Picture 1 (cartoon, rainbow, N blue to C red):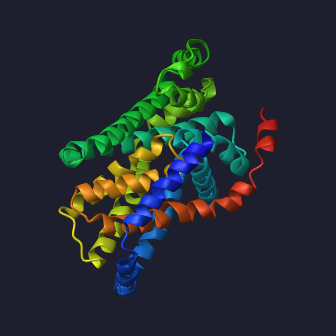
Picture 2: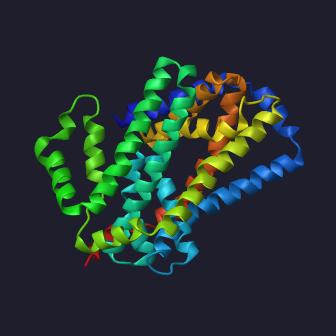
Picture 3: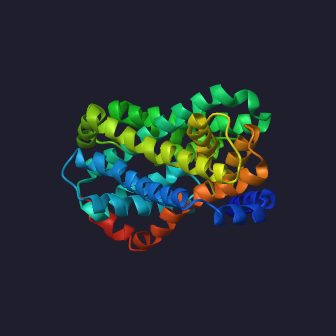
Length: 335
């Protein structure tokens, strides 16, 4: 199964590379205005800092935490997300990562990680759903199904984790029963994903529930998190992609809606198809932009550049802290 997933990712990337007019791409990048290049680079740095801030505002809501701690945790989780086929499974390692860098109690770290995943999923799902309402008529049937399933899963994952935090005991028993007794892995088509989903959901105890409730009612923290998410996930990729398209002499019908189109396209990364959605995310985004009027020969390299700057570079940087992660040591000192 792993070989199939890696093969699917490689095949999708090969298709994108084949679609691109690389001669035109090289000429375009070489002739880009220096101001545009500077803006792209500055925005990319600010995007990474915003991703750090998303973790930092949640940790800081509990106790004062150094920004560098959130930065290392973000980079490590980003790296893990690129080698595990599902973001849900990848994010389930976040409490272990945070534990190594902070040594905070598990009753604090598990709800912080769960709340981060819940907010991230709800925001992604809501924007993707809005994108579907706007662009569905332009999508092919296959693309529409893939994006719809992905958006629906986001809107299941987020509220499910919120439910686990608010109704911890009853929801926890339901999750355990569903996974261990009902045997969700035997459900056709979605069984393996459902099994990993329930296994990755945070396991809340009484102390953790208090922490989760404190986060869920801290509206200023939620607003700060949503602001960071909006800037990192929508504003920067949208502006960066628009600048690249403009440099190639290709316009977008409504630049304001470009961030929504990208979120809608990148939503497929939740599906456990390839590690980190590599290849599939690029293919999906290329198809979305092509459906909205951007030539595939321009859309393909534009998306590759956007993903490289916004996703793969931070993930590569996370390789260093990830290699220093001592899971056995962290788990052995549980109280």
